[in-house]
Length: 186
Image (tube, rainbow, N blue to C red):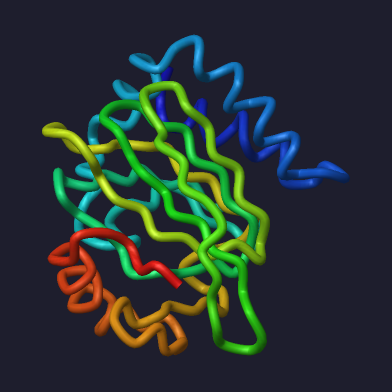
């Protein structure tokens, strides 16, 4: 398997009447060969921001290899579209939120993902992702739009003030979020 094989498999899902479900079916198949998927994406570090993680982007589909080092936590954020994650290695905890009003958040659940876990998220989902354990959490992330060119939001991890996602500010928010004992409880 190669990265272009993954692109070909997922490209067929973009025009489906339920592209999120079609992506889920492909991810379920890929669970049978996690090492093959990891090998196909081994040329990507998976770190360094979304631009360095993306290996395919179109108006209706983005594919990224994402790697969170141990202890890394994101600020609350959305994706501006639906998303699905297949964990290739490590453990990733996701704290999920529901939007309250125009800018507020309410914590609704947590889920721990391990090798082979799939997490689908609707477009309205807001989450915090964090690597738990000693090894990096590495995943294949699939989005229903060009995730680098979609209107998205992030929330300050301390004040929970919503703001447009700005990659020049995101890293400092992630560093602050990573120093906290847990994801924001609201």
